[in-house]
Image 1 (cartoon, chains in turn cyan, yellow, green):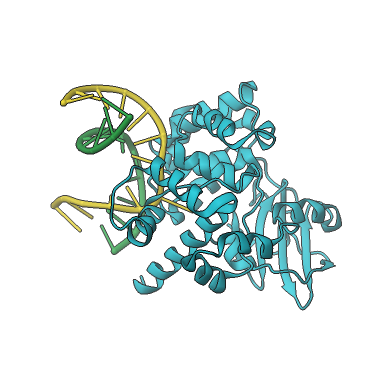
Image 2 (cartoon, rainbow, N blue to C red):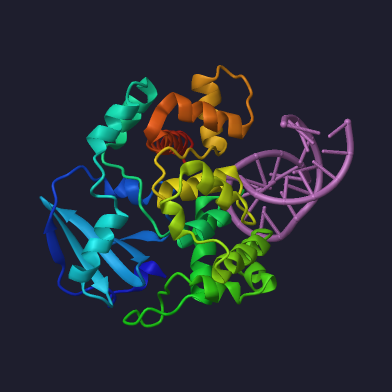
Length: 298
DNA sequence: AGCCAGGCCCTCC
DNA sequence: GGAGGGCCTGGC
């Protein structure tokens, strides 16, 4: 379990000066990634085959890695966190919309991550008709079963599995982890990637429409999941995933209750919000979820 | 107890 | 071509 590891990532922190807008809490806990936890005063996650801890102190970020040196991990992490994205410019491009302006005011500094597309693909196949606690459990189970133990963690933490490792799994094995009907999709898509029939990294250079078409050819990947992968890992800021929350937002606030199907809602929103529609989407999504979870406490 | 959740896929209109 | 039901599982 994430919280029990005291030996991992506990060396001297690497400190780097950073004064830009960055809300780690919203960024790491807004449903775009599922492997980060609160551990003491740190955020701890698994990325780049390492356990990583990060926190903000004054005008700097502190990073600890395990097993690799934080100084070596830092460039990867800065890229992952999209620290070079110009948030002010992005906000300007979507803030003609009042709903977006108020969400940006609440969660300024929340960034859309630039994740590994393979991990993103598998993670979002898991999200279908599920919920965050279950998704988080499912992904940890997959890592434990098919990933590699990370040295220095006493075997408690595991890397995200490679495409080859997951391609070797059977549907039954994945089902036993509690993935339900998603198991077949996971194995099938892993095999497609492991065979090299689809090159996910290459989709970073491809136009949005083309990348969308390739992704939706994978088992278990429809328009919504594909748009998540495009937004969170493939450099497509115009991607706009329409899930039930966004569906409700749009109908309630923008479409006056009229019912379009989800793909039509997406294209409408991409037109409405423009080239950074994905950022608008993520702020709407996070705002909506925060509102409903605080209004209906468990 | 039954419905629905951060959907996808297939069938039938 | 589009709406509707089925699918694993868990939580309320």
